[in-house]
Image (tube, rainbow over all chains, first blue to last red):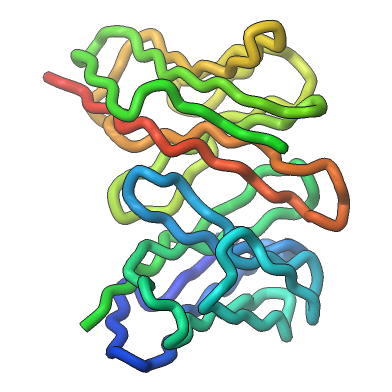
Length: 112
Length: 117
């Protein structure tokens, strides 16, 4: 079955540590996205990528980094510069503009 | 700029009664609008989408929404609530028509639907 796989489901970060969240899709979608979800705030866009080897900052990119070396993979690194990383992170993909995005089941990141 | 306002942060209904989740949007051009549902600790699932075809859009699980341009609304309804409908619902507008921005979505803050037995 086609879909988006995010791993791990739960992740804990120590102070000063970088952590990487994995996102893999087998939908053959060109566009991929990372969102951060906090209670009562909806979803906010961190980064997005429309094609391999290209990505753009979203609304809250500070403290995060991404790469897009393969069409099916779009990992997100939460760096030590992100001072408030505790949140639910969602990865999504879409086939083209104005078409719905498909979402993974998310990774919940917490601080130790 | 595009924006979305979900008028209720929480809605509580009894099982078997109608559901109404309200959404108003702001857009400088003809928008694409979506409703997504999220169950706890899960990703978002598309319920339905409006992309300038019929103004009454039918979705999965008996949900439907009506696009009203004059009222800039896109309310979600269901005739009879089921216990399994309890979840958080997001109204979403496509954020830009410019190709270089991809398919940027603007999310409402969400409405938590509670269904009482």
